[in-house]
Image: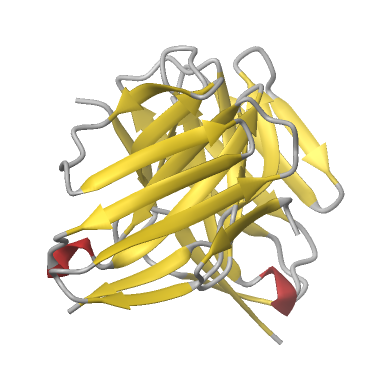
Length: 112
Length: 110
């Protein structure tokens, strides 16, 4: 069956370090993968989209990698700040439609 | 803000009530979505509208009834809900795969 897995345990890191979050998927062949940020009681906010033919994408302190062989994406936040504390969701497109399938998210806590 | 608004932000209703959730987008997108988000679960897609036509209904119980009168507005009509329907209901609009979410309605069914 199709599955998207993100580490359900919270990730706690110290300010200034690099946070790395993982998204693994099975039985999908996505055309692209996206990362969203969600704060408590709010809707998700789009961060980055990476296509199947791209290995890496960067935006300011964010970097996403996409390995279609390993069926994995890594999401990095460099020089992390307490304001980066949130839940981060990965999402895949479903059969080249505009439908997105979301993972459960990983909660990141950056402490001073 | 993302340009997608939802009202009300919080709603408490009894199982016999009828209520509606409203979503409005000002981004010019052709697709709109309803999601349900429960604790410890991934976002569950409920309905998809594309150009005001419903293109997806993910086996959602009939006590949830969507309506899309135009490309900017989306409603979710609720009646005879169950306590397990308590959740955060999110509306989104989309273009070329990226979705823009509203702040959600926190629904509690007593």
